[in-house]
Amino acid sequence: MKLVWTQIKNFRSIKDSGKIYFNPNLTILAGKNESGKSNILKALECFSLDKFNKDTDFPIDYIEEEYPEVIVHYQLEEDIVIDLCDTLKINKENAHKISGVTVTRTSEFLESIEVDIFKDTLEYVIDAVGEAIKVINRELKRTFKLDINSKSSYLLSDLIEKIDSYLLTIKEFFNEEQSNKLNSIIEEVVSHLEMLNGFSDYISDKKFKATIPNFIYFSSFEDIIPDSISSNEEITPIVNRFFKVVNQNPKLLFDESNPQRRRLLSDKISAGISGDFMDYYSQDSVSLKINLDGDDLNFFVYGTDTQKPFQPRQRSQGLQWFLSFYLTLQAEMKTGSVLLIDEPGLYLHASAQEDLLGMLNNLSDKSPIVISTHSHWLMDPNRLERIRLVLKVNDQTQVENKIHKGADAYTMKPIFSAIGLGLNNDISTFGERLILVEGYSDYYYLEAMRYYFQEILGIKIKKFKIYPCLGSAQIINVLTLLVDSETEYFILLDNDKAGRQTEKKLKAECGIDENKILFTPVKSKNTSVIEDMFSQKDFSEIILDSLDTNKFDKVLVSKKFNERMHNNEITILSDETVSNFKEILDVVATPKFSHREN
Image (cartoon, rainbow, N blue to C red; front, side, top):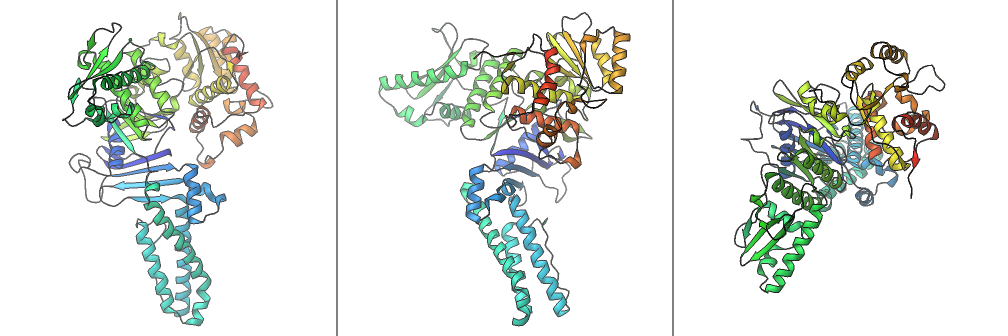
């Protein structure tokens, strides 16, 4: 299952979110407090529970027929698509048409499930029935009308029943001779109607229902590992997750009466949980151990002094939270659920938040994760395409998939900080080496190509940061923050009139050495922008592949390319493209490229 987008309507502060596009692995909802980030996560939780609370989930100004609605669109795995083709006797050449599924759940009606090929089939059936009705009206001079269409909100079973009734009506109006004129139309409608019936049965099956994304909500303020639990008390969600991770049945553990066996089980569980946990937590050397004492299971946290046990509540809130969060992630990853995490890491020090981001990066490869945050430590400057801005406009939550649009300075602050520009002019976060670029499309293309050189071609590149200045004129403003700093910087400009004018200003007003100013390479034209660094074939067949060029947005195109590159969907680019980018990276990433040693 691959999540694609969600749309939320009439839920709490959300009137209509528009389509919120998921990153395939880690999606970050960034926004200031009270912007509505948590409401997006809660809406997705309600989708999975298929339950909306009228007291808490309906808008304050709720009016009739504006009920909460959550739509989720995802793509089926290849094996499910093949099974669906076999079941419905669909030509596998058309398999790509049926991979998309849209599920709508509301507080008022039963869920609606649409599969892409179902839409095509339904439109065909409705058109065919309409044709039959036109023949009736012509032959009998009637005005028999068709009152359904492909955008109808009917449930599938209702549609099938309604089309069936139209067929019966059509047959009633005609004698045998007249019916012959309609036979081919009716036969075609019946064959497609059989497919709709088969599809209706298929999507009701448990196997298909299991493909629908399941969202699990985790709050940063709850679900903390307890000091102990008793065999006769209800097991809390976090303890349940603990037993999922260690693959043990708590009842069997409590029922074990042999002291030696109890000790062996406890030691085995403790060793497994501590080893995995320390792979992610670098703040301190700790281990989690359990001890069975009669009907009680006790949790202990040990530090470097392995002789002194502490109860979890005796350790910092940060460690308690990180441990509980680790258990939650590990447990839910095993179920294939999409984890929704509200404000992770509030209790964590900056370096511990970096540990947390590492864990999120690692585990989101196995199953998608969606987090809400306003911490720049959880925004990887190399992966800004993951960020979705959550804004509050006229007391209503809106989501912007483009981080370069619509946000105020406060909302953008953590993003600026992540890529090296704090609003307090703290230049220390720029790092040792920096390249200033004109805009976000330059940023995304360079990030993608840095990944390509390092991970695909296996070429070492010295670490550097990329900062988008939102226009060549703003580069001078950013440079004022770098004066007398130890950051080595370069400036990449478009090779056009505006870029050449900026070059003159940089030299005249800022005294910038011309060796620090780079231009996009010019080959056969007098001017060039970063898109021209790709060969024509790469740009049309790889970058623009599967995109709607009628709605061309250069930043979204570059963002999609970066996303696909990091997901290893692109593995081969032309020599021309590689050569053009190498000219830039050779300078920025000195010393010169050298192949990795095997």
